[in-house]
Length: 117
Image (cartoon, rainbow, N blue to C red; front, side, top):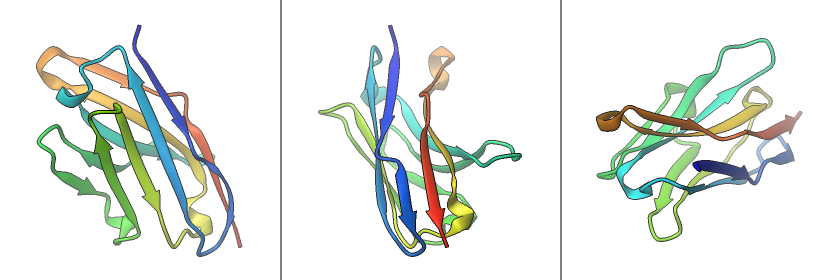
């Protein structure tokens, strides 16, 4: 059974920081490209950052150097460090694991990030 379990969300003030974690089980973690997405109320889910199996990293334009994605293949965990948070970053953040070669695509349940002004 595949599980992606996020944690680390919460309520912070503008300019604050959070570190999100996503622990994966039931997959060959090191072979998966891992991503963080977010969905704000009334908006579509959008990609925040990806770290591939190589690994290489990619970020959405709105990140502007504020967030850092990383992975630990020993602990099957992907992280998203969120710095300089703004109210516009308020959303549910979702972990995604994808392996195109075998057509696998998995989602976590999400963790809420709320940034107060």
